[in-house]
Amino acid sequence: MNQDREYGGGHGRTGKDGNRTLCDAVRALGTAAACARRTTLTDLAFGTSTLPLLVVVTVVLVDLTGGTGVIWLSVLAAGPALAAATSRPCGVLCVGLLAGVSSALLGVRDGVPAEELAAVLSALAAVTLASVLASALRWRRERVLAAVRSVAEAAQHALLAPIPSSVGPFQVAVRYSAAAAEARIGGDLYALVPTPYGVRMIVGDVRGKGLPAVGTAALVLGVFREAAYDEPDLLAVVGRIERSLARNLGHDDFVTAVVAGYPEPGRLEVVNCGHAPPLHVGTSGQVSSVDPTHPAPPLGLRALTAETPTLQVLPFADGEQLLLYTDGVTEARDHGRAFYPLAEGLGRHVCDEPASTLAALDAELQAHVGGRLHDDAALLLLRKPAVREPARPGDPVDRTPAALTGGG
Image (tube, rainbow, N blue to C red; front, side, top):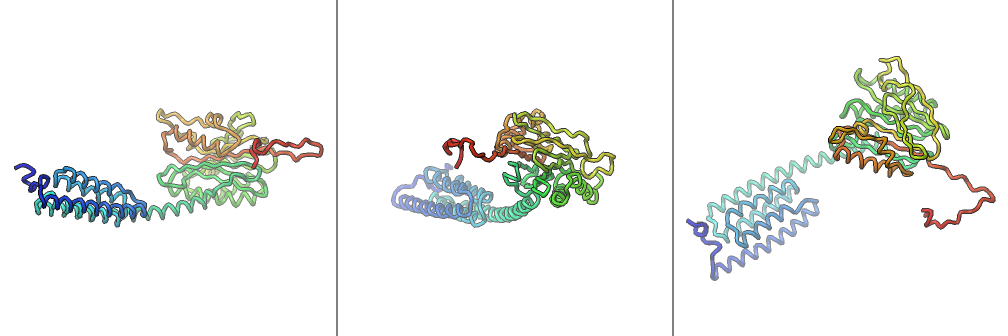
């Protein structure tokens, strides 16, 4: 039995009845298109995809232009099934209703036997109901995830407060990347605050990952921000952090950190507690490592050794820069397992704008690892811009047009 006879010769009808059926199908297609257009607007209002509607309309057009009956009708179930992954429950239901109406009209037009058409419509209804349920569950999970993200953002602003581009006498830029998927914060920490004793900063790395590391980072930042305002001596600030960690951390937990301060012009103080050494950029662009003269253990482990932190004093003139970072940057590997050469990258991209320097470094780092870091990474770069001396009586006046000097 050939296919045309089996389905009642739906594609070969002529005469009044055939023309009437074709006209009805065309009108139905117009109605379906208008419904699809309205549903599309609804989906766009909800921020969903129009791809499921295009699937339904495409199947209808293929069937009208010479399809093979029930084979194409069964494909209409792909519309609501796809909508479950892209639309809200109401959008899935609209796509399912559109697919059901289109299937019924096309089945009548093609002369599909009633039993087979009923089976197709039943399967389509079942797929639509299952898709609505799947969409409702997905939408619920998305709302929960949005709430979690908002909490994470609030926590980030509380722990890792945004640092302005200018703090005291410094230009400042910060880049932070958490390795955990969908995370905003991790085990790396940074802070930079102006105090009565000059600008003070910390960059550190907590052992471990996840929520315990975040809790330890919050503890260190809270103690640092309080002690930085209270203690005139930078070593006393480090001592308060050490005592707090000794009371609250386990035996195997610790924090590596660099604490630095700028108490007076031209004088930079650095205390390194088991952390990666900062990188210093001279006025000529030469990059050098600020290695500690007397290495000290990480914070939280002082009781296990006889070593104590020491204060390292460095000259820091106008035009010089200092980069503090965590090992998530220097231990980032490419596909060949090669580490990222941070000092070389800094030498290539350093400029008078710290934000531009870190943007270039971050882009190069992401390219080095192939787009995803496997550890938390923090970069904090500060630059001491040159201060223009006030004009003295008798000095020549600069009459260069503002457009040539970059002035506003």
